[in-house]
Amino acid sequence: MKVLVLVKQVPDTATQVKVGSDPRAIATTGITWIVSPYDEFAVEEALRIREKRGTGEVVAVSGGPERVKEALRSCLAMGADRAVHVLDPALEGADTLTTARVLAAVIQQEAPQLVLTGRQAIDDDTGAVGAQVAELLGWPCLSWIMEEAIAEDGATVRAGRQVEGALELFDLPLPCVLTAQKGLNEPRYPTLKGIMGAKKKEIKELGPGDLGVNVDGPQLELVRLEALPPRPPGRIIPGEPKEAVRELVRVLREEAKAI
Image (tube, rainbow, N blue to C red; front, side, top):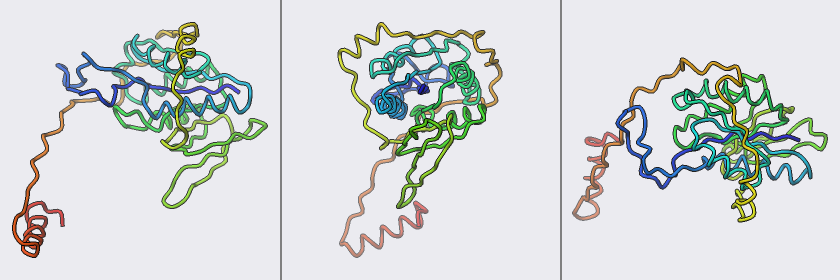
């Protein structure tokens, strides 16, 4: 079974992100880039599927500038068999639908039985690409999965997602798209052997003309990024408990408009 995993390279969560000179983008100087954590759950699940079935291929796919190869190497070090990198400058400013069109074209070329990706990327948090890819392909999609099990004949998959107080189970025909939620698994750390072996694995590079997709003219335009305003200092209400509680209620009702 071939499983294709869509991954995105994002700024490390420990990185101090600042708005760049162009207010529509962040300043990239000094940023450490990583694989989006939810995508790591997807990579790990793909590897477990291959290991459980005893055969198959795991292919990591991403698009963007040259540095994206670092994220793909991380996936290869975890155990992915090979990777596909769509190197097109236009993708850097693409909206989710344009990105989905490019990824859907790659999927059509690769013809996997299953596509996995994270529930959302931690930089823009749209959570849209997985569902958009499925819609473009005409495949079923289930988002935020917490568990999955593929039938022995490889024709269907049973996947579950968490709802309040329960686990909601679905049976989907393959091929389909599943997006991974935290709790699906615990991603493995690449071993030294895996890191060294990743250098020899294939990263297939596709250019703008290799997929037959027009990436011009996004339908969604990012106008401006703004830093969050500084958090106001906390307020201490002095006095005896009874009077302090009365004052707290007044402040919440009249000043904060919280109650």
